[in-house]
Figure 1: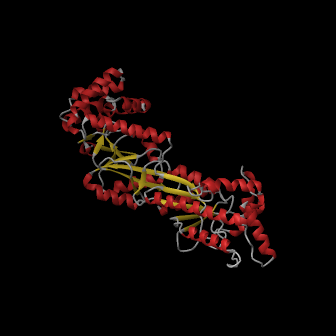
Figure 2: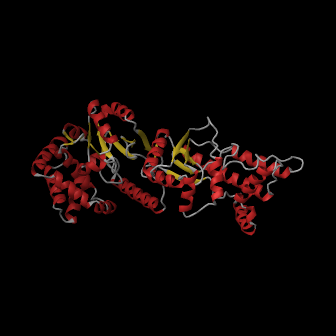
Figure 3: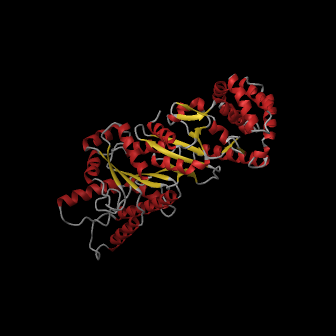
Length: 491
């Protein structure tokens, strides 16, 4: 059990909130371990107290910003700092259930569940009889469309285990009495037949007939007509299928908004590794996007020049940016005469600045719309910044080099138009460790280049955005926990 889930359950138990973990209690331990959602039913008059409790426990509210959410439902997320795992609380105040995709029925049994609870470990759950009533209705309603049947087949083992846990003789008798009391339109004999059909299990044809009878007796609780519900289910299924095929990000966003998080640091400090890990962690729940500001994709205006430039570098290796930068440093170390950068280097620098501005402006807009954008490297307008302007800090006589000065001014202007990130995670590691890591990875950089980048450090303008220094000279698990905590505290 995660410490975060344990503390939340303890706080709810002492706060006086009437609640229960209303479904899936056969695998409750998985929910308490962060592997599944915590599905909590909250007594509606206690909603404000519940929200205060989850806020005190460090949980953040989230919403689905692109698709209509189910009414009377809220999402909260909390970070378990000991393990780096996320606890997802799915709270509902009315019981809206039924088919997995359409959720078309609002069952008036909240008081029945909340009045018949027991403690399972530290979490309050419904009595078996009350949970059996809701489980039977939910499962049988999933037998009413072809799409739902396909989804149901995927979970047949879990459903078999759950019905076996709930449907003993004593629970069945008590559940029948609850049906008579709380659902007078639901024939107790039909309820008993449904339980038997699920427990056996009965042939599919029999379950389909029983499911249609059950759905007919619950039509007064439907949110939409059957036609609309069927179309809603199909549309939701198609959307899920398309998202999986195109690997589209999840649609949940924190109500506090998205963020643009920049990972910066010298070579071989672990930027790519940490972004991979953080992306996988956040992408389980939220809309996440990864970008690389050091190597941005070409914008429409720069596409053709960017095709030509690599060809020039192949024909003239001396024009590569790393080689040009190395010559600049050696010249400045040996003479005070101004370094006259090649015109091709200046053009390439302006194109790079334009592409970075385009990439990061789009990323800033997506972050404003709720996406968490993770950026590998970030350009800052500061002297010596590795990914910042490269021309303006090499002053040349204006009269003698007008074109170069014009390009330098344009490059600086483009960088000044790049928005600031919401958070900078600055990674550091001893230079010898960085060199050893560089040798071990697939794409190796020249050792003098690694030393040069390491000695330059990362120049981040102070006061413009939060900067957190992270030493990556530790075990990956420890470093990752620190990074997760830093990001979560900023979101």
